[in-house]
Length: 158
Ligand code: ADP
Image 1 (cartoon, rainbow, N blue to C red):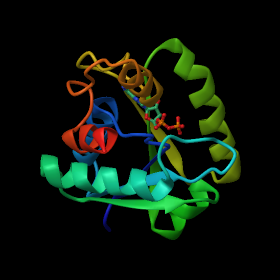
Image 2: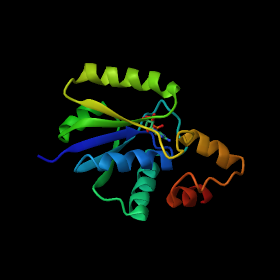
Image 3: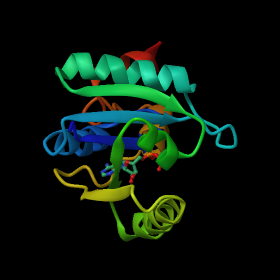
């Protein structure tokens, strides 16, 4: 049976930190689905469709295979299981991530015990990279191109 994992997140926009996690996940699974969240309560810099398109451009740019991108508005664990995916992928940066991630993983476990969450620790000097930091730096005129894929730089400059 094909081993599929789902990597859910806002990806607003995708960063080199996300990409590092994604590449490590691909090495463990046959297929990874990047699931762009479309939470109307959270205000985002890019629409869900734009975030999806940027990720798809990034996959082509970096030649990343066995990854697809989709948008979700419902419960992630339910969505995952409907596609035959029993693992969620998340990343951990500083301790501050832990609290939130532990709560999310526990809530997901409560919703469906068959879907487990796997965590990758940030590495390669990416632990300070977040989508919000990228946007803050960019808005203040800092060159963010070493921290994000080209497709993001192109969108930002549009
Ligand atoms: P969300 O709003 O769901 O937290 P994000 O796009 O901010 O979505 O993050 C998605 C996942 O990727 C989270 O688990 C986050 O901790 C992880 N992540 C983001 N940036 C990094 C990074 N630089 N290193 C490791 N993990 C990261």
